[in-house]
Length: 107
Length: 112
Image (cartoon, rainbow over all chains, first blue to last red; front, side, top):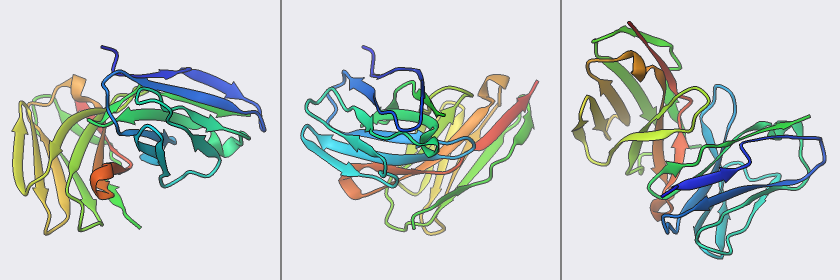
């Protein structure tokens, strides 16, 4: 039972590139969340989903997109990477289980 | 603007002492409150949740909630060096969606 799995663990992007952060959970939870954490800061909610096909914006959604085609998967898409998106990204599911995080640097 | 405030620390306590971590929140309608422990470079780990006024104990941890004062605290008894971490306070909002607002965390250092 893996819980919440995130890939990749680390990534360096150039400004303007795009990428998808993957998140998969095996607990059959309907609710899933994407947070970002900047150094010395708390976590900020980017997007969340209450079930397959249903997503909504959180506090800091600009520059990101999500989809939820299955209960298990909740990928986060960055279309045009900017230095301000350098952060650690955490995916979480209801029951407040967090994945191990993706450390993203945009240069 | 919903806010959760924590003293950033560091809070330094000797091994075996009680560590007291505090958190205040701004949204009066919040119903659920959580404490997470985060080791450096790791993901947050849920250690306590509390929903009603009063105290909730789990092993060496006690969470205290006072909704009238909009105040949540975490006590760690018999602190161990392995408790050294950042402790994040989180408060739910948005009703059934269970979205969380996090504080910036308090760094706890337990000295052997």
